[in-house]
Length: 137
Image (cartoon, rainbow, N blue to C red; front, top):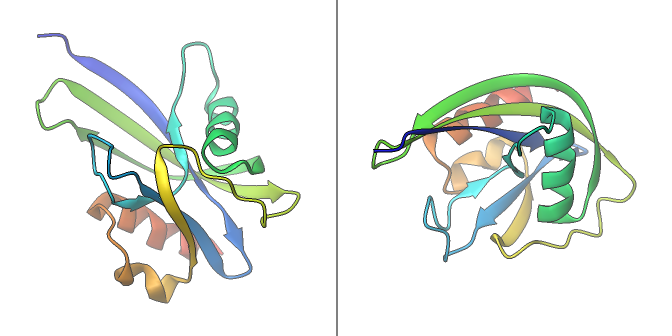
């Protein structure tokens, strides 16, 4: 059995008092149709900041500046072969937040307040880091 460890990064992007969330495609094999904050896996030789800037651009077409990490979590895939560590960052958008174009990995997006978090389907870990991110503002 090959065991793999990956590192992911996620971006807490706000507009006013609202957070950008994206809904995973129904075709995704992991957490299909769950909401999350934009992000993805770090590629070999990439820094976490470089990966986050690239992933946010690929997933939303937004440009960002990475400010600081604020939380982490990890999980093991259901088959026990992949361990992922995810680092969440507070980021600042560069330019307009009105030109969001989603990649094929996501079906829709929303801007939500802290009070609206319970209205969306998140993993428990993602919900926890979103609540923690709102506490940073």
